[in-house]
Image 1: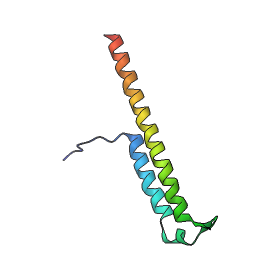
Image 2 (image 1 turned 90 degrees about the horizontal axis):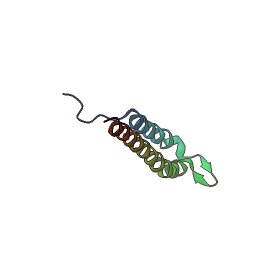
Image 3 (image 1 turned 180 degrees about the horizontal axis):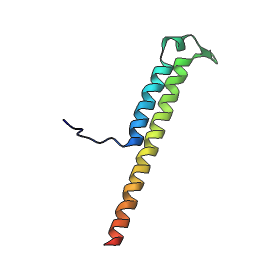
Image 4 (image 1 turned 90 degrees about the vertical axis):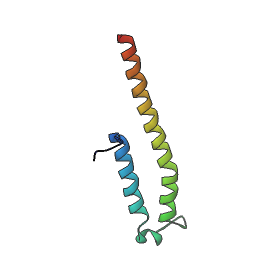
Length: 78
């Protein structure tokens, strides 16, 4: 049984990075660390809340740029 959906390399790395980020910031030791009277877990959640969509949008825009460029070159050659 093969893969039914091919995941681009950059999106796979992004997915693994999100999982690693969550594991690091949401481990029990992060509950006690306080920065500006806010736990490290809350800072990590806020950072993920901001960074994940921004990086995902960038990856989507970059992949669409590549597809449009390839389609334009192909249509110019014919």
